Image (cartoon, rainbow, N blue to C red; front, top):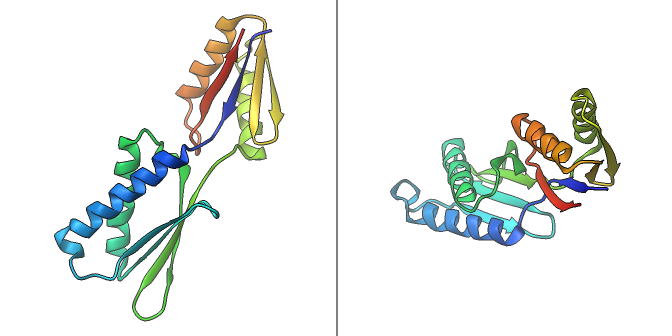
Amino acid sequence: MPTFDIVSKVDLQLLDNAINNAKKEILNRYDFNGSKTEIEYDKKLNQILILTENEMRIRSIEDAIISRSMKQNIDPKCFDFGKEHAASGNMVRKEVKIKEGIDKELAKQIVKKIKDSKLKVEAQIQNDQLRVTGKKIDDLQSVIQLLRAETFDQALQFINMRS
């Protein structure tokens, strides 16, 4: 029976490239000249640490990261921009988490959406991904079109299409 998987993953090498490009852009900008701005990507915790003087600069850094990520074909929905925290001195710190894997609530929403479509397919939750099975490949392609039309708060990829 034809199947495919729905996952939410980020290519970490492309993300690292995007963050390095954003760092270069920020360091070369005139409005950041002489600032104590730091951008670090922690691969173990899978998050980006931003440290700078004020919230306006944090917004500029976020915009640079998003624009550079989009140029690397990374969906900006994978970033979880948390709240700013006061750091030592007059500095502001922000932790940006990278969302990977489909959590249970989102998986339930996707399964419900697939069942409501009345297509003859079956969706199963498997850890942090979903497997969709059907008798016809056309039904599976219809599911992919249906889910691409929806707006979820996380980036979805459709992989391992097998007939």
